[in-house]
Length: 252
Ligand SMILES: [Zn+2]
Image (cartoon, rainbow, N blue to C red; front, side, top):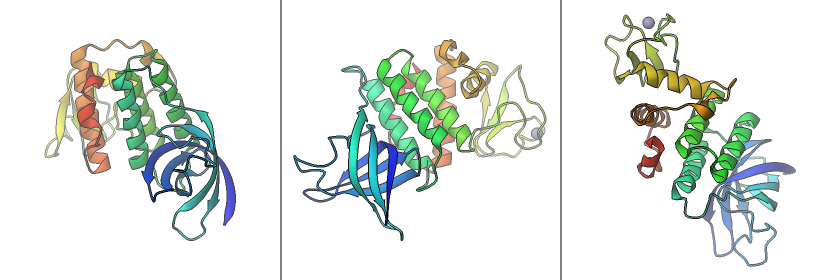
């Protein structure tokens, strides 16, 4: 066993015994880890009350060499996830980010940029500067990009020919992006997307600019994009995210 230091976001806390918890952490240095936090449920514990959902903390843990849970020995609180009081939408959006991170990442597969994106997104949700739906969509797009799952928006995912930007385009949920008129035939789970929705998605996926912050998408376009993203992510995960039923506000 080796002792490791890491910066971590708490993605899940499960009671393990009367005194202990099992935590799932997204660490910047090692990716996702599962660790036993002995004594975490005692009043006096070495974890500084840091093991709450979506808390940012510095941790020390003993890494198990052969599978099994790591052992968390210390946690020091850096920041709590604190959306404005009574703002359930931002709270649920935070839970949704945690769910996506749990589902889309593998143990000990570090993605420092994804960690930083998650950290920034949670801060944005807490600050309430930008609409909650926009913060979540930006997170989804960049997370998909960093993990290699971003759909193709400009070139046909099958043959590479340019699609759009005018008129409606075919978007293949299973194919993983837009399809040209020649390639769309015979494909399953293809939806028709408006040019405005496609442009909106591109804006949110463009990590080079912050244009998404000022993008003004009408309610209809937001609803259209939300429908595509929910469907696409459900396919990618192999199930509908548990938080989706609570996220109707994202399209508002
Ligand atoms: Zn094509």
